[in-house]
Length: 55
Image 1: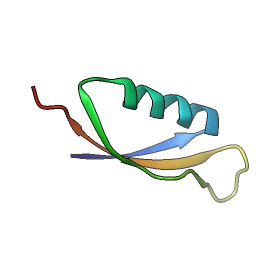
Image 2 (image 1 turned 180 degrees about the vertical axis):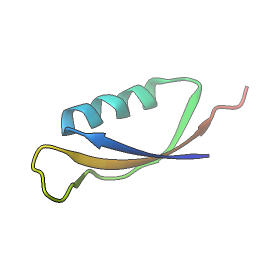
Image 3 (image 1 turned 90 degrees about the vertical axis):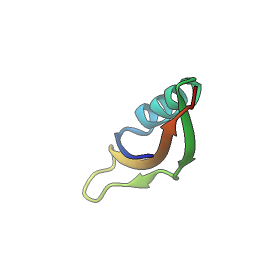
């Protein structure tokens, strides 16, 4: 299992979440809500737990 921290604009985070969910080689276990980063209104963060899909 991998734990991934995604950081960027809300639009970029949603885009990458869709990529993870559509990839057949990856099983998404969990994706957190989006959190605001301190000191900026532009950048946010979210966390994902993923694992390889077994063949």
